[in-house]
Length: 494
Image (spheres, rainbow, N blue to C red):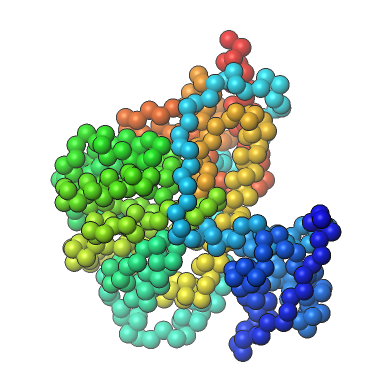
């Protein structure tokens, strides 16, 4: 039977909580049945009119609940078909069950593999010159009204002792919520006393660099996060580039193993997007133990994944307590939201807290109180489900345009998660030449070589898509794809 003709199920009445709004009641009842698999994938829900009549609420209330479920990826609504349970439950993307790894980094494609008959329309004018570099959370998606209500409530109930809180580790109830979240989302069981609230990952890097790495060698991925090189160098550390391949950092190819620290991005390597394999994780942990060294795990965008749940955090398999795990809420909420966290090994905790107290970098306690409530009430998890759907749609939009214009042989990697992917250029095309040509149509690009010290993996550009609206994404992707196609055809004709 076709979906358009499938009969909708009847939903039995579910008891409403005493302080529960009608919209929250409907949302909670349907989501709960999806999670316990009472409602199976592709099941058709009653129409908003029918459910409203059977549950004695207004149709508008049901439509709001359905829209929230759709925003968070639990259902899909199509004209002529109705509202169907999604094929994949969005909570699966927060599961700690290990999933398969992506295939890794490809060779650059040949210009001759691209169809000469592909459409070669004129380049579009781009209104903005920030296209593709916005590898950040979209601030327009932040639930401002919800946050305003939580802040207002916090201001009413916060007491003087809370306002006097000067614990260098941060507000304890927030640390408890972060610990609980990491346990469910990243498989990381940690004591809240080992969680330290910071202003972001750069703050965490600075604290670790000052505490552990001054005048020491630090192993850093190559290509890798260029900011880490600068921050470690600023305190007198000596960064040592270590090659990255299809399995992540290759510690066996490090020029030296006598380093105090290794800085890595295991979940979604920056910038290649590969996931560090289980074997490489084991090798890295063994290296840290044998050399009395530490590992800094930058878990910058593990919450945003599209094809399945990520591998467990490296820290979750750290039996000898050698990993410093770090994340940041500005990667999930909005860029200027200056709250992040560290999970610090017991042995390092006194030194890290001492450095934090001495540097005087603190977070507003009111922001910490509000964030703790935001997480506890389930708004953070709901926000992640919502933005994941939107970012996936934007990613798919850009990739579809590239494939349509450039053909099926175009190579893309790192698209399984995060805010960007790598677009590999045809053989003979230089990334810096493309960047210069793209500037002429007001498109800014980051090149793979911008993140490299000595590594040369091939010619590629980073395509950021998360904080750019559909109109700009479409225009920019069309322009860039036609620019690449023109250059590839010109090279093939020579």
